[in-house]
Amino acid sequence: MKTQLFLSLLMAAIGLLPAPEIQAWGRTGHAIVGQAAVATLAPAKQAQVLEILGITSAAALPAALEEACSWPDTVRETPSWAWSAPQHYVNIPRSVTHYDRQRDCPDGHCAPEAILKYAARLSRAGPQRRQDRWQDFAWLCHLVGDLHQPLHAGFRDDRGANLVEIEFRGQSYNLHEFWDRVLVDDRLAGQATTEFDLDPWLEPSDAAPWAPIDVAAWTTESHGLAVTRSYPPGPVIEDEFTDLGWTVIRQQWGKAATRLARILDVVLAEEISGDSD
Image 1 (tube, rainbow, N blue to C red):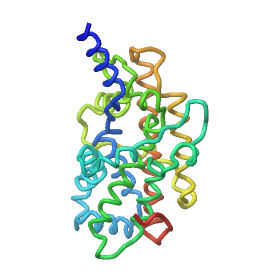
Image 2 (image 1 turned 90 degrees about the horizontal axis):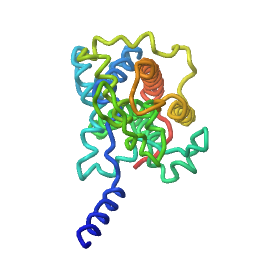
Image 3 (image 1 turned 90 degrees about the vertical axis):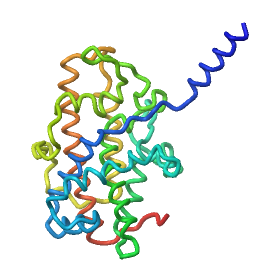
Image 4 (image 1 turned 30 degrees about the vertical axis):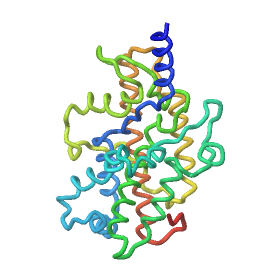
């Protein structure tokens, strides 16, 4: 009887533990977004990115971007960066259709608000901020990518679909993992990020200059995709949902790249207001 009670209490405790967070898009997706974004910048802005990344040759740019844009995921599990985990996502109630900071992120510690913070910090130049600006760029590149993975603007009750079990090609995964890397790996099959052409999926380049208010709209948009297009009709992933998902992923990568470029075009040109940390 005591053994049964112990096991019951143990399982209850395990149920209260946070589900492991999967890295949005993995290194592949974050690298593709970063490379496409920087490629659309004017040469003077590209030169500033090279300086921030600490490289002098454009040939080194793909590797430097892959490292920087994935770095926030490599440090999030370390004790000194454990505080940063909530910056990778935002939870929005199922019953609403839009992001509201006061309701969804009152402490400012979530993906959309972190994007604003790092955009503001990146705009502050100076030799004393060289290492800080590398991290600010890395966070900005990474979080714009994260925000465009719909389940990173999903629901608290299933932990962004980390608790939703699915089957794909005879293997078991959770749905968040399927969106982050499983479908990407299936469709790219080891293709180098520099060989992937995102151009057909980029947004038109004639959009208005980026403004901080845009981030809330992007968050609402991703949440809408979480509601309408991210959950399969059953636990087994069929071809129709796979094809739909791959289209959504490429569309979201294209939006993330275009919008990251819009942010960089503004913050690398002039200072904007923001948190000073």
